[in-house]
Image 1: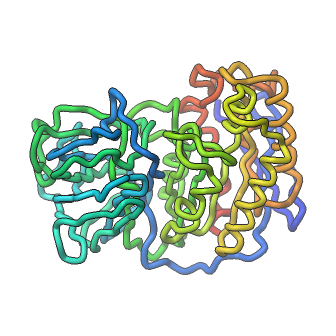
Image 2: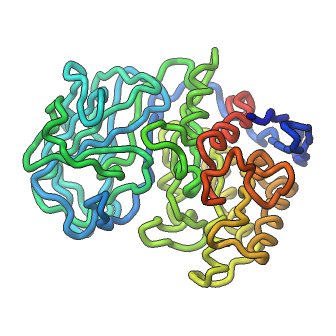
Length: 424
């Protein structure tokens, strides 16, 4: 059963309004912003993103030092908003050498690695088909006329002539992408030349569109593996940001895109290797700089708590996490964006749960809901908790690891968000 949600809007001091829903008391509070954003359509808005991380070779992704050479990667991605023109952002953020790109194309995805041939468009960079991306840099393609439809998968193909490693990429995609045999197959529509399935997005970290007049901007979903969609069905696009995007698209009138900047294993306060640099370090690039960004939903901190209890990182207290949140809030407000805080979901039974960590989570959640520091709050903890035990997931929403939701859990999270509050 999907819980209903009640949103309480107040000035300055947030309070929660609890209602019975499916036998559980859930509380969701959102606060009116100090300054409302102007209701105008931006010239460009992000329709898809994937926060970049440092390359590491695994059995399912050749992004490490060996990299790839004379091969084409076909990233399958899910746009959150429709548009009439498109451009792509390629990243060498964590590369140690220049990344040579020999060809890039975009097309409507069909089945597996195949595409709709008539939709294929070659992308250029300053009018050229090739580009070299310096270490630490990103590049934007030229705009191209291309019809993007919300919910219709796109295939972004990137041909790399030379050895690239390590490649900037995004892991834990819950999506199959593809790697070719030797050669440039950026414009190839068939699947035969892409025999290898990979579970990462390589080189690409954003797609922007020229949106319709009803689009006011984007919501940046910023967080860790729960925002990244770990535990959802592969190729189903059932991460909570995807579901939120579908809710927006179904809405009549003004709307927003939703871009997903979650990284599995990411932490607020400290770098996490192949789980990305800290939230504090990536917030400017992954949230504030997103085209058309209007609102940010922050759901992160459970890995700081759990890894601290395991001894992987120094002890993290609730005061430490709160200080990190306060810095993110200050940066968002300085950039003219609103930021909404989401409570940390239950994790008792997960591999790194401890009574001490539970106390930290509860203290952090209390501060999120009662401090008034955020422009609004979303009580994901109450939404996903077992009605009989608030420390654990509702069994109907548990993916099985007691840390990540399943598809039903992600649906409940997305359904609890008040669209009007984000649009206003």
